[in-house]
Image 1 (cartoon, rainbow, N blue to C red):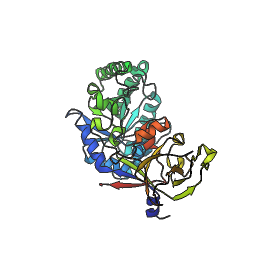
Image 2 (cartoon, one colour):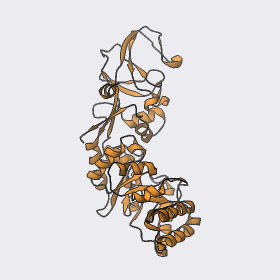
Image 3 (cartoon, one colour):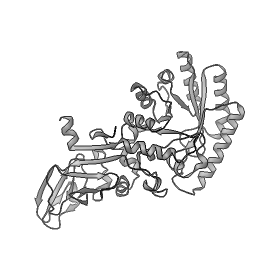
Image 4 (tube, rainbow, N blue to C red):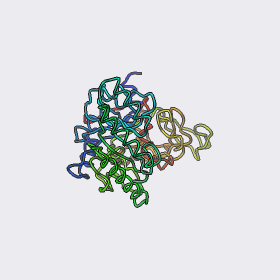
Length: 381
């Protein structure tokens, strides 16, 4: 299939102009001395890491963030030389390459500090490391009970010329739930752990804790740097926090399929696997060539909203691997017509949040799961 034909079948339109505007809006929510890290992990939440990274930097982000070192190294391979923090390392990961690429590498435990210092000896080059504190999330990061030893060994490695400690940071568990008691508790713990590190002699370039919801609603958490992820793509981190429009943000991705087939069927006709949808009357069905292999959630079977022929319709029956069906109710829709699964909502189309509700999940997952079989088309490059 040619690229053009693939794009006609299904495409995710990525509005880089909207992304730049979102970054500028996020910069407007923080103080003039607070830097913005554009988080481009998971292929920029499904939007395309390299184009989105470049657009974010053009709009004023000064750092980029990734989860895996391979994501970070791909940015370097694309010629992006901005500061990049990578936080999810596992034993045996490419520390040497990270040092040579000038990555900031997160250390959450002694094993990681030892591996990165060994890499620094091999490369004869100091490693840029940031120490991550587990202030209550319970995932990555160093527990308070182990913090003194980690800080001490990091300072010893610095004295040996093996590392530069460039940052101290943490991550919230419930910043998307306004008023949750863990927010204040985590902030207090971070301030204590940061204070200990600085008193011991750590001189971080950046101190940071704020993810998207904290960037939007908790100015006391901004420190030197904020790390907006999903908000940069114009998706709200939580309906409880607010809608994208509440924060001056605009969704960046628009997911569109081309109706592959329209046919008339009689009343009582089963539709898709398991016949969970049976036509109540003679009607017409439209086939949309997108399925769970493309990231359309099967959990949204019978519930997912789609704009086809000027109306929002619901997925009829089960979402299959490569396709799903909508009941067109006899409306005049031709093969090749657009089926808009989600977008900004400006023209009556559903949003990623609508699909999240239909699939009992979060909008993060809806945009991030859109697969590689769906062509990315970049607008306003």
